[in-house]
Amino acid sequence: MTTSERDGASVRLPPPLVYLLAVLAGGLLHWLVPLRLPLEPAARIAGAVLATALGVAFLASALGLFRRTGQDPKPWVSTPEIVSTGIYRYSRNPMYVGMALLLLAIGLGWANGWLLVLILPVLATVYFTAIRHEESYLERKFGAQYLEYMSSTRRWL
Image (cartoon, rainbow, N blue to C red; front, side, top):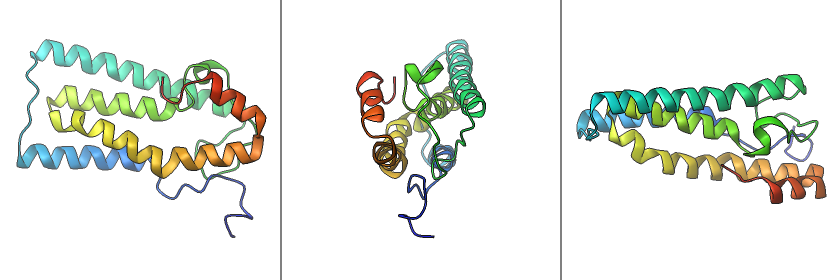
């Protein structure tokens, strides 16, 4: 099936894999050249717990809305409608924000500064490998409705 015959964004690299690879790369970098966070354990753990709670909340809220509206979270699968309620009123990409918060939580919990350093490159990678393809697909499919949603809702937060 060619891309023009398929109804879905042309995303070839699953975004969760990007985050997982960052955890592995950050762990390897930390093993080779430790970059310990200069925070007291209590502050690190508190930050990790908060980031985990927020990350899980973003992911659970977004996945719950997808399930209720019959959406599939895989970006290469057809999107039947634009979800713009719930967490999607505040972010067009709450699943990616949630995963970034979990990456932050792991970095804080492990005192691994490399994981924090990798957050921005991970978000850039997700943008170039997924988000721009998703946005292009949604604009083609939904036109003015999606453009209006884009203008009223931030990409991240």
